[in-house]
Amino acid sequence: QAFKEHELEEERKRKAAADELEHSRLEGEEQARKEHEAEDQTRKEAKEEAERLRLQSGEQAREEQEAEEKHKRTEAEVEAKSSRIAAEDQVRKEEEAKEERRQQEAEAEAEHLRLEAEEKARQKQEVEEERKRKEAEEAEAQRLRLEAEE
Image 1 (spheres, rainbow, N blue to C red):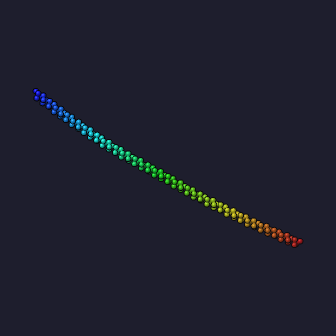
Image 2: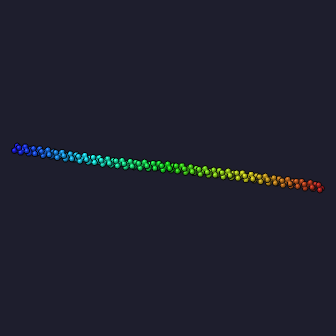
Image 3: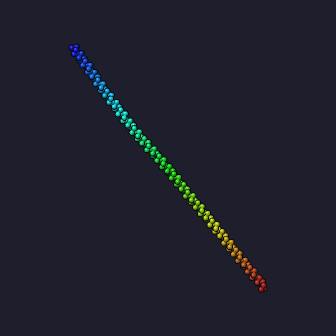
């Protein structure tokens, strides 16, 4: 009886040890599975973070490119406006110069016509004075003839 009890006790100890060993093995497997899942999760999160950073970097690069293009457009618009203003100024200056030349030509023509008119008036006055002088001479000659006849 004591031997059977001892055998049963040994069997219980072996079974308990086997159960403990199985329990430890299962715990080890569970721990390994959890560690594997944690590693998978860490890899997944790292991959997602890398993708997020890649997309963010791409977005930032796109934004920088858009800003650069906007800056270039603004510079081009400023340059175009500056060129347009310079061209308008040039046209205005040319128009002013043409108007100045027309004004000077008109003044020169007016002066020429005034001088011509003065010359014609002077010539007319000389002709009139010559006619009066001749009339006066003829009148004097007529008077002298009349005196001589008397």
